[in-house]
Length: 625
Image 1: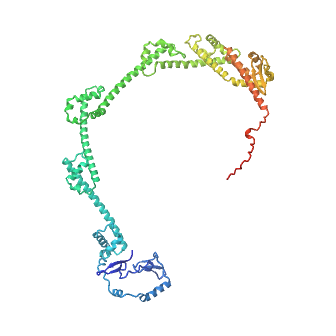
Image 2: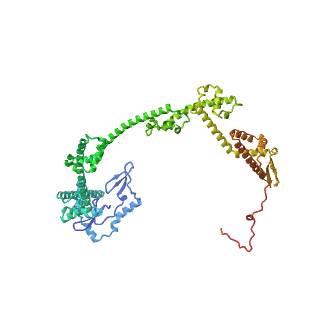
Image 3: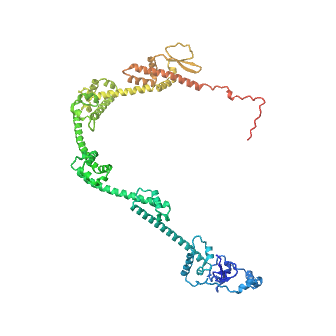
């Protein structure tokens, strides 16, 4: 900001006042540069310092913008000072004005006051003029430049600071006053609502539109002159009515709670002498409706049916539920004991009156005990069923029997190992008598625990025999399935052996004579290096003699003889099928060998690979890349 401020004297003439040096001038002087105000000096020891001639400030640090004048500039300045009066020609008016002294009036009236008083004078000046945020600081200067209170603060930057602080404080004060005004308006409007409520003009179901019309009709001053908007007044009204509703509901709930507390005490007396487990909600409610004391109590009038039901559910029903639960627990204990006794009785029946072994079936023995009281009593009870108890005994028998069966199998295995030439396991299992006879001949200590004389159907020897026969039968079935499932692979292996020994096999004839009428041999026709089976007569016995040196055939023959011991026709069928498949596999092998020896055929060039003839007068094709 400029240090020279414009001012007017008593006659209205404009002059300029230096707020720093307190100088005055009719002409506005040129602003001096900071380097012109500051000058450099040196101490006796040669150290340089700087002095401001205008403010009297001294500093060791070089001021910002300070530039030392060159010697020629100094000389030029000195010359200009000497010649300056000659360079400017003053007008008569300037000379006349220059002779007159400038009267600063009261501008320096407060120059000697303290800083605190100066600040107060400045703030009072702003407040008296009602300065607000619409005033710029330039407007403040122009308005108060002739006011002594303005010059009470000599520092221009301090004036600006006081101005800013004044606006901030004024804004805070105005905001506080506005808040207080709103609170007063709110309080006054609530007072109006209270009076309307007292006079019966306002209820919890009153609408804002109705109240507003009433306020307008009565020309209510608080409503008419309120600083609040309609939306704000409506919000206050809505909150007020909501509170009325809440108060009403709260009072109603308090009365209801008191009535429920009293009813709870009353119900305890009512149900005291009744069977709690049979006291249903319908029964209790009918009793209350017909009870003279209940109908005479005015407090109960506020209660609805659902209120009484909730009380029943919270106070009475848990007791009913607990009573029923206790009764159920007692019944469960009684039933549990009865169920256990029924199971024990049925187990005793199965053990004492029935002959159960590892192979027994429930349906076979059912006719023997279906009319027994122990069986009838256990049916429909909790816990294990009669069938489960039956199978428990069968499982126990099976476990014991399995151990004994393993002992017999071990004894037979050892005997077979010692007498492999004469022992025939299939013969041992051919009949129960043969099985018992063999066991008797073993003289094995492991068999002393068995009663070999008991050959009844329920006896353990008979049961073990049946299990061994069943296992042997299953083993034979698996062996048959294995043989039948591996015919193709065995036929291929036999065909390989036949191919390697064709010169020794007289039953196979390979010929290119399509008209050959040989019937006692297998004829393989060769035509154009292709082999096909023309005929294969049924000569099983001859083939068996011929293939005595074929390992694969001998193995299959022995196995099938053993597996199909009781059905030789099935054994012959398997061997014939094997021979037939092997002959066809042999033809396939011969074809495979023939194709590998055949030289590669030169095929003619396909039509697609032949060079196409160029058409006459064909136009060239230009491709632009």
